[in-house]
Image (cartoon, rainbow, N blue to C red; front, side, top):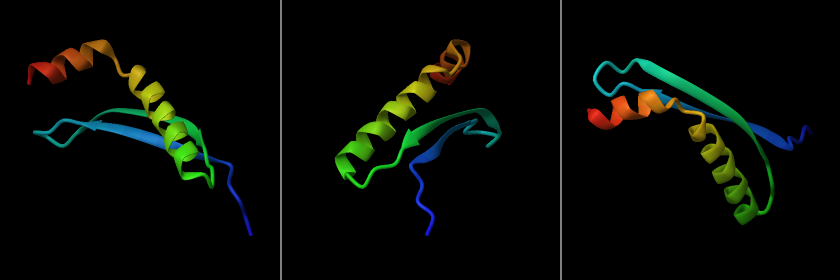
Length: 64
């Protein structure tokens, strides 16, 4: 049996009109049997990924 201690988290941002992929960010989260700990780790990883989202793209997205 293979056990994984880390998992890849991918955040994709799509253009809602064209459905084109605009940006992809990824990170690694530690996998835990403890649900609360796993959720906390996943949230931190997603926040770190989103922090890398280009500021100019955020302004464009907010203008739409």
